[in-house]
Image 1 (tube, rainbow, N blue to C red):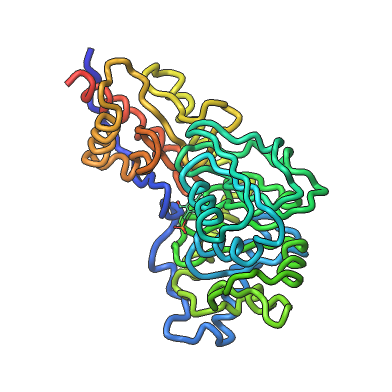
Image 2: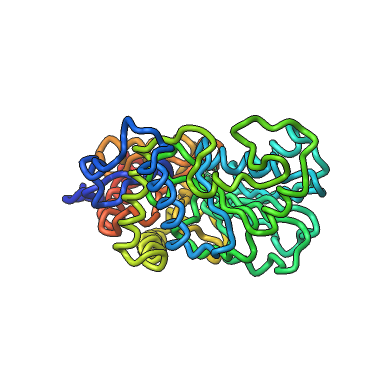
Amino acid sequence: MAIEQPAARPANPRFSSGPCAKPPTHDLAKLSDAPLGRSHRAAVGKAKLLAAIEETREILGVPADYKIGIVPASDTGAYEMAMWSLLGERPAQMVAWESFGAGWVTDVVKQLKIEATTHTADYGEIVDMGALNYDNDVCFTWNGTTSGVRMPNGDAIPADRKGLTLCDATSAAFAMDLPWDKLDVTTFSWQKVLGGEAAHGMLILSPRAVERLENYTPAWPLPKIFRLTKGGKLIEGIFKGETINTPSMLAVEDYLFALDWARSVGGLKGLIARADANTAAITQFVENNDWIDFLANDPATRSNTSVCLKFTDDRITDGPAFAKAIAKRLADENVALDVGAYRDAPAGLRIWCGATVETADIEAMLPWLAYAFDQEING
Ligand SMILES: Cc1ncc(COP(=O)(O)O)c(C=O)c1O
């Protein structure tokens, strides 16, 4: 029997994996305290930048002896800056299980050209993090945004490692517990779990990462926007809001709003609970429908932010065309925007479940997915 068109639509159909939905209470009018047209080095600007750093520390539970900086070019800027500033002192272990991790592998192997061992897993799988050599530097992505496969925890990373761990946590921060003692470099962008803007990246450094920066100079030149040290000393100002170059104070205000909202939903615990509840609604749907499954094979590695799904019905002959047609139907009905799988990932859907998404919206969208599937498969 054909499935009827659902009666209700999600209040917010934005399920993009980045930029992600704004916090539910967001309103541009609430950013009117942004010190626009003022120098970011004026007291008011510096205070806002420092507040963004310290509130990040508080909500994420970053240890007091870790440095947090606001740097240019979103997560990519922060992660590239870390790799180019820190790697090369010892060999690297490059780890990837989807497209973004693979991008960092390419950078190290083809651009930096340092001694590196590459460990990869197919979409849906994860690399055995216990099998790595932690005397080397280890570069990895906590949550593979394009496969929906995440690290279940940091247990495989030894506390007494000699190398540094460089973690791209952009689709994990504010939705998953990050074990700070296992992470020497952590990066993320405001545009993901908190639904901020993409302009700037966050760079979090452990004391050992700072020690490396102050005692090792890479063999290659570094452009000004990557430079974290001067005369062999960390540029402390970067970690107090004296950014390397001019930030967008509008984006900063927007991030401060998101941090306030994060606190209002219970901080990190509340944010994780929201992402978990969203993902649980999808899990329930997958269990009730035999034509759809998670791309992540091991339930312990399933992301609670970038939830990637694949269609498993035998009647589908052209997987990519089918998945695209479903995503288009959902967008045309204005019930789910930007939910097609990432361009390099296997065909399917990717539904953002991070904290800014309301569970009621996921629940209102899922009947539309069943309806779209039925329409597409039965014509
Ligand atoms: C894991 C991961 N790394 C890096 C990026 C790039 O982030 P940005 O465009 O904010 O630099 C993304 C964006 O989706 C991502 O998911």
